[in-house]
Length: 215
DNA sequence: ATCCCGAGGG
DNA sequence: CCCTCTGGAT
Image (cartoon, rainbow, N blue to C red; front, side, top):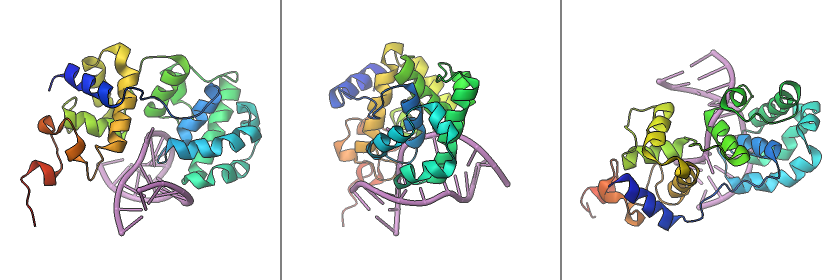
């Protein structure tokens, strides 16, 4: 399947794919993105109002103790690490970046809790920088659809995607792949019966690809 | 029971 | 490279 066909298909399936994290400014988005690891956007959105009422800006969160932050995000799981991360994130923003969320990859990556994936999301959402954030969904789907090879690491996957997908579509495609990964192309038991890409898929679900090994 | 939209650390 | 951190959704 050609790249253009895949992109067209994704457009039909998820015409309005977008970041579902609620946020009013770059500070809130940066915090929300870090919190979103291993949870859903909906869960993050649930804790955001109280969290940002208590810590309306980076300075106030930096001034707090980690133990004061934890209760607000406990329901997300991994709460201790996340509290340490967003506290350090707020501290870094206030102390090293004049209270502003950095607008470039290098600086973003120096902030606690912000890896390449989160940095890319921040760049895309806050600053409109065309970017493809490669998370587990995106890398898995890229392999299955043939955008990348099985042995590629995250950075290599990102490179392939940047080369094969038109720049103007990077952000949209990223979100579409996330949606596709969550709704259909799961890691363990992909719902290949609902997938328009099964035929060209490199690692289809055994139950569908093989022949119906019926009972 | 099983899986998550990562990052940091050993 | 592999491990851990955690609760919630399914």
